[in-house]
Length: 222
Ligand code: 5RP
Image 1 (cartoon, protein in one colour):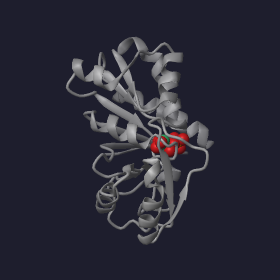
Image 2: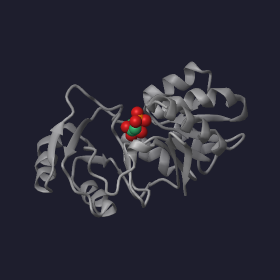
Image 3: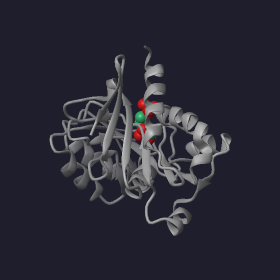
Image 4: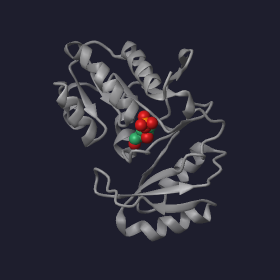
């Protein structure tokens, strides 16, 4: 089974978590795209969606699936029923690294606005400790040098993602080579740095359930 087929399988498995007549939060990336395509088969069963990026909103609309602004959705419901998205890495505590596609801030916002976060991955994303994947940080452009030097002092190798601007008009700094022993602490520490919008560690907004595709089928890690 190819990685692409595994992504398709896990995306279809996530349909079981979609709550009828509710507003669903939808993530960003190649696995989330497979989920959007699968969600199109049951678009009449939901009220609509909130997208975590412009790219996701466009794909949802392309399927004729209604997309609400988060603020509008939250005038109708106190929380979105579920947030479904991929990840770049996950550890045994269901902490995640996200932001490979640069949508981490909106992803974290939509995850925080949802009752449950169902994370859809293939088995290549499973790690013992986060850190092998470069940690993305969304940064207000004037803070670039400040954040780079703080990230380097933490023992990483910070690099600006060339030619990339987030949907919020900011830059992404990717930090290689971090050994992340305490994901929650590092998430908090980096978010305290002035100019950091957010970083790609999802510990406060970690997954409630991880659906992991393997060649033997989809495993549920709850
Ligand atoms: C985008 C993300 C994605 O969820 C993450 O990069 C995984 O992407 P893919 O499903 O393409 O492997 O965080 O910002």
